[in-house]
Each structure stands twice: as structure tokens, then as C-alpha cells.
Amino acid sequence: MRQRLRDTFSPQYSSIIEVGGAFAGSVTVRPVDDGLLLEHFYLAPAFQGRGLGSSVLRDLLERTDAEGVPVRLNVLQGSAARRLYERHDFVVESEDAIDVFMVRLPRSTS
Image 1 (spheres, rainbow, N blue to C red):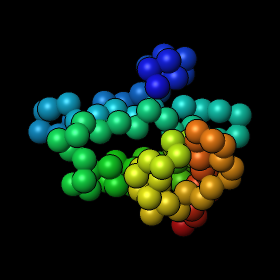
Image 2 (cartoon, rainbow, N blue to C red; image 1 turned 30 degrees about the vertical axis):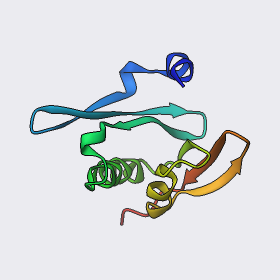
Image 3 (tube, rainbow, N blue to C red; image 1 turned 180 degrees about the vertical axis):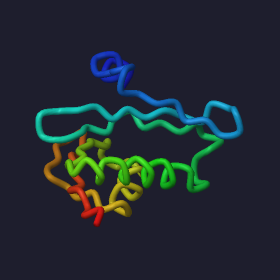
Image 4 (cartoon, one colour; image 1 turned 90 degrees about the horizontal axis):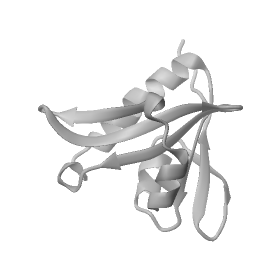
């Protein structure tokens, strides 16, 4: 897991999530050939299960919808985060023994 982060971390596309001035997590959204790639979405355990992930994801997707581009991600097989992404209209494109690859097409902003 650490090696994956080291190999793909893009500080220029990463954002820190703060709540009340405290570090709550981070997320990276970087451009790729066919849209955007959401990766390294992390919330500190104290902030999980309180709706913060949904709120951050909703705001992020509103911005990507305005750009009119698809957003892709991969989530580990068996991860509870998959349900979060499915609630926000991500669908499975493919999967392997380790990852589930998902995409969300842009919604019309009109």
C-alpha cells in the first residue's frame, strides 16, 4: 500500500481536508488521458462514518461535472469505501484480484 502511494502521489493535485482547523484527511484528483483519476482519498479514523467523506466527494464531483469529464478510481476488493462510491453513481468498469476499477460519468450541470 505504501509503495502504491509513493509511486503515484501527485502533490500538485492533492488537497488537505480540514475540519475545525484539524487535519481530517486528503484526496488527490489528477488529470489522465480520458478524464480525471480520484486517488488517495483518506479520512482519519476520528472523522470516518460521520458523512464527511460523502460531503467531500459531493463537492468534488460537482466541480468535475462542471468540467464535463468522467472520474475514475480504483478501490481495494472488499473495501467499505466501495459503497460510498456506488452511492455517488460510480459503476464498476472492471476488477481483478486486488482492485475494483470504477467510473462516474459527468452529470449535466444545466
